[in-house]
Length: 199
Length: 316
Image 1 (cartoon, one colour):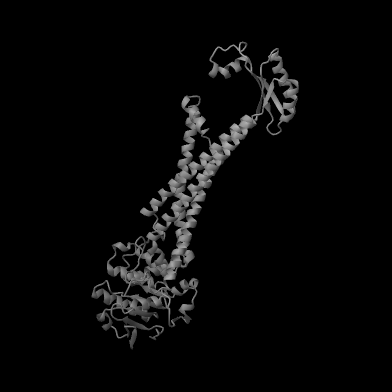
Image 2 (cartoon, each protein chain N blue to C red):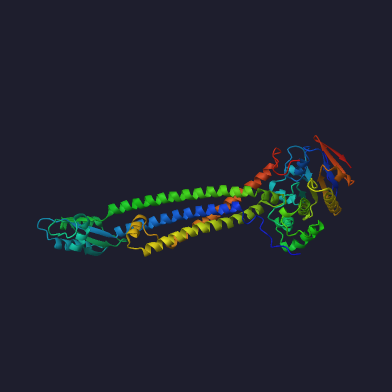
């Protein structure tokens, strides 16, 4: 398969279960090394990048896991601020940005709450906020609406569209046809090793 | 909007962490106990050795026509004529009778028995006299005299003390090895329990060094708490036993304990050793944590090149 993800583009990645959507996302996120073929990101061949350079490249990619992967002992605020913290930034320099982003995703009132207390939708939004906090060039979201009801799914979709409008390329892996029908966006359909792209 | 003070990236305490503190405390206690016991035995043996080698004894056997008192005085004078001798004491009748009392009973009249008599000469340990020459002179001047420089006893004590110290050092090495292995397994357990944190940090762009530093800080705190508790307990135990021994001095229990174990006094070097043991344990734990975390991160990166493994992300 051959495809590209243009800058500032918005696309859905879909296909039946087991088709390889998550594997494709893993390849794009550099958590899996290609054994064949060529993947270029940010102008570099992913299979040739030394291990110690991977963290720097990953910082340019935001990822939203299907199971959120929030740390239960950290508050919503601390979870969202985590990418900035690991980059060695001082808290004073990012506090307002994190709070503003949390308000933007509708978690303004849940800043000091620990993840076990959050609902599925709130966790999903916290995970999205964490992926966005350092303004990635590309956002990969794996079934971001898998755990939420349709109204919440619609709200999350608006969030991704808004983010895309601000300049981030977005790839959403999903089964949810209803979700895809809400937006006139590029569709990449993965079936039995074939990728069909509908612009 | 107020936010709470930023929490550490690793949860400060959990069941595994508390269990590790207890394990480290026990191992530190055992290591300090062994260290203390070894230094105690060494000090006691050195004390014995020094006491024995500080003195020599001239024994004069009774003989027909020998004026014992004159012979004793002559032997003492001959010995004190050598460079390296400091003082001489003739064991009088009373002292000799007391020495023989366990075997011959009280009220012994030395005139009735041909009992050898002793002259105790104190020598300068640093600059001892020439025992061979002294022995020769005594043989010429006083054939009934026999010089005992305690060499046999000193040699036996030296070999006994070195054996004990060697065994103690061996035990110490074993305790340390067991401690390091225990810490490695316990650390791995804690890291395995927190692997999701390592993964999340890795995926939000943390470098290996950052993750390792976070774990190192966490384990340094844990190991300092555990080793401080274990070492303090050992130090308190030695101090308490020392105080008990001082207060109970001259009682049969204390004498027996002192005969068996020596004095429960570690001295500043012993306590310094306990502190050093604590520091070594803390450093070993921290180092183990660093190496284990780096290996976990390497493993996460290795998964990249193995499509059969799906540890990184949930399956589609």
